[in-house]
Image (cartoon, rainbow over all chains, first blue to last red):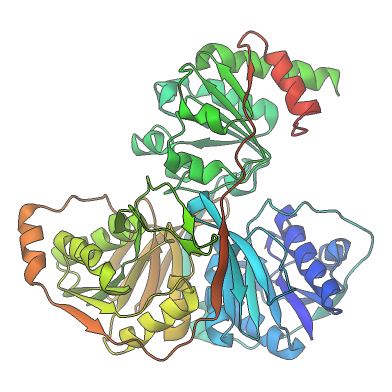
Length: 325
Length: 247
């Protein structure tokens, strides 16, 4: 028996969130007196695979088939199901992201395994297997008990700080036989935003709302984001007006994010917007309307005009970086 | 071509969430229920467009819920669709909901199943992929554009840090988000027509839930905002560094 975890990589490199998932699985394994087997698919170097040991993986099973370099929910699920059966796994961990959301439910369906998607806590096993997750798009949390023998949990990224230790995982190669159906989705075109921090993983986020007045004013937010190394986000009216691309929309009907720092500029703070961002550790609100409801949900507030305050903040960050190296 | 659209009933987005019975139940008192926005704005409207364009012959709507879900499914029928199916059970467990829909879908020979990327109540975002698993067909998640031609789909979808265009033969389950279609408002003719459209109530299959919600919790309230002078951004940066420890 072991705990298995899907370790996602981007072009052969494991991201922070993959270490989060491995560490999460390792913590469950330790509690249950067993070990973690990480599962990696597609093209990854052995040295990179071994690095998962730093987050507590004892063993990495590597299915090196290059057809797995693109996401096929069917093929990835087949891999996890095969490994789960081989290892007699009782807990399967993945991430609550584009990959995990496509793969984990399929594993749940095949193994008759209860699923909690978007966990924000380690399981409490004193009375069952209870995991905390966000519900009502961030307006509340639910404690969900998984009652099936096999359990599938996907983690909200940016929730479990990684403490990397020493250690290299043992890498084993594994063959899984696929059929043509497993790769029947053909990828015609891929366009990746290069260089930018993906919003879902960003630790720092600068976000703009209708109070920015128009897309031509966004450069002040872009400058601040660049200085901080932050990702950009926006409120729904901004995405609806096509001032900014849809994937930057955060809120109840957009993305839910949990960065360390969320700087909201010109966003009034409607309940639907708060739902998507109130998991942020620290919230700064900049708004010229002192009555903006967002101030009630903020840690720090600045009443002022965005076009004046934001460049000043950018300059202050720059100065801070210079003095703190 | 037959399309099945999965519809979920959820609390209106402006709802202030509260719990009863020692935080074990979601308090529905005074709550207005709506069609899950992703199901309505994108999955349903795209299905209707495909029918209007002559690509789809039938658009059926399915929901898993008790009788209290009927007003919402009628609202969905007012936007369009030929008939609706309500599977007469209720659960927060995504496995159970998807398994129930799968049992029904197996009887209907659907070429395409459309659903929203997630429901805004339990936020598992799992039903579409579970359903594809139960039906042993392909799943494409987070679509931003869906085109159907010659019994195959061309789907633009969100991937980690970008977008990808895929093609895949039907049958297929697609979960939809912004971009797939534009929200519509039902007109009087649609509302009148919905009254007489068939709404079949189907007994649930014998499937047990694999999860249950033990209790709920509201996020801790912020202890109070610290106001900073707009003239003094150095102070804000210093606080973010030394007090909040985020930069």
